[in-house]
Length: 545
Image (cartoon, rainbow, N blue to C red):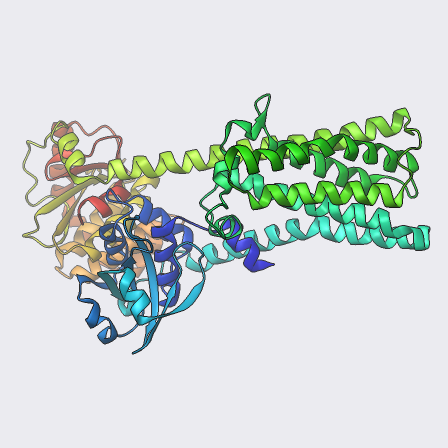
């Protein structure tokens, strides 16, 4: 069941799927969600360059190359490869787990399963492009364990939700057996068919949201004339603007809810549902005829729905008295209407929510790709305010003094956003040796300015020239949940050295006033103020491009 849940709810497109599976093989400590967000936010996504930069950004040693096909057996360890399953079709990414003299084990890019294929067959698809990563130097994702636990909780909740209706159906069938004895067979069959119909229509609904899902692709493939898309995207796929998928889920889901909440025995409910089954029977002939004669393509899921409808009609005829009068009362009508209304609300509302979430994710990824495009970034950056006042000798400087990229961070030691920006800049320094960060504080040399004591202390620590101690002191100050100067000063005793830093604070204060600093943190990149549309975290990708 967990595998099914993962296939339906936790699948990605080809590039993302290959990246996630490769990261799992390498045992990289990063959550799938973070990995995919990083990859899909790359300006060149979905390309091998995007995959390369994603692993490189994690700290892995990465090599991408184009090799001759006969060199493939010489490649050691798992790697990402580009293949073309069908000549002339789009090239796809796959993860190759093992290459032996006569066979290749790789992840099927569309089915999402590991398969073993002859080396000749694989060579015919292989384009020669590969990517290999060494994850031994990868830094664990921050809060990795918490992210994993959150994902696991989500899977558990999804599994429980998926099992809830089958469990309720089993309990209802047991109740049928207790109250009806040998007469429980056909009501039980009808209930199981309603459950199965609800499941199939759930897959049809999911197809509307994510028709590229590997599980759905497996179900909807199997021959030249099997094509769910051709049917589900056709003009006949809806009635008065409502898709047949929603109508089908409403029909079977309404039946299922009605049967689960009805008393036992209830001839009125059974009679009503039976006559609804007879009314639905003509749709079977319409759907089959349309697929056979009009579209000339078959939808496996649609045929499954037709099979359930026919089976329900048979169950009603065999297990009931179809010619008996319709037995209903007001309470049953209300119950029936409520069940079908709930089913319709779940299907139509769920589709809408999933589509909005998917569109929102797409827009976020598009914005991320826009923001991480170096050419666009530099064009916008050149239009921003430029620093005209010299910064030499001001504040604390970290990183390469000859770096091509110089970041100025103007901050307040008690500023929350400044504290959040610090670990991001620290990570940029770790991953990019061509970056320098200069920290300028807004504190004033005044007894009335609470910012002055910690700034003087940090300046005194930096004056010692121990870069590692300076970094650690900044980390300790900004990472503290509560900024307590007395505790910080006790950890880094300066023996009065901090009292001699007043002139440094005056110079920084004067610079801030001349530069017209109005908020913190204010970030400057190579002398230009960071545009408002960009976040500090975007610099991780832009400066590494």
